[in-house]
Image (cartoon, rainbow, N blue to C red; front, side):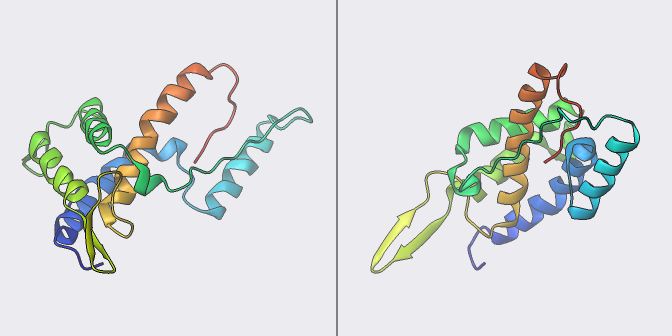
Length: 156
């Protein structure tokens, strides 16, 4: 991807993604092998029943449909909730401003017209992936708090 914000996006991704994975390991399925190991453990604990229901869903165009301001707020909420005020000496408000640049300074050309992206983040931008996952963290946190009595295994 050749965009003016690619360097900032890559920097933010390298800064934030490891922190994100550190704090969501218990609810993140990283690959097929990870899923299989979790299911084997679920069965070994005697949790699999004939009444067990599995549910999957897909959010279409998540990266390009992220509400930009809300995503930035959720990013800050995630960092603060996990005890970060600075990351590698960079204050959260500076990280938010950099993330805002990555989201809001995207333009693309279609024919002879130039367009500015006003919703979501650019596909292929490294930090857009991490930001979308952090946005989903907020949603899943709220969902799981409501379903804590009935969810036996969860991952995404």
